[in-house]
Image 1 (tube, rainbow, N blue to C red):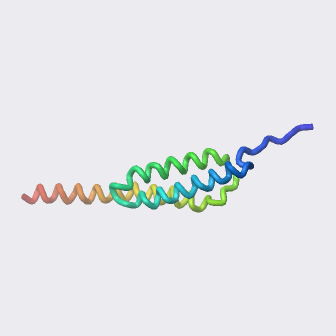
Image 2 (tube, rainbow, N blue to C red):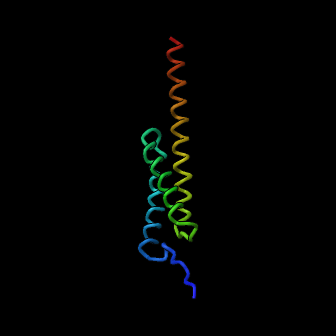
Image 3 (cartoon, rainbow, N blue to C red):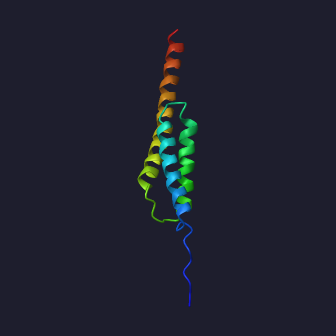
Length: 99
């Protein structure tokens, strides 16, 4: 008789950790929307996303919506910081060139 492998996420502790990490990814992505100050938290949100997706092995995650939003917000925060940096850089160049 052949036994089926035990899914490492079948234990409640592992499932709770997966949910907590998904919610942490969302919060980090949300804080990452603050331009310039949000760079580290955006990066941490992306790291959390990749760690959760790697650990879940495609199993069902009840907080997957928060995980995906955390990824989106983290990327949006980095993009917003790049845009803000470009605008500030252009303003500095124009003010120096105008003098």
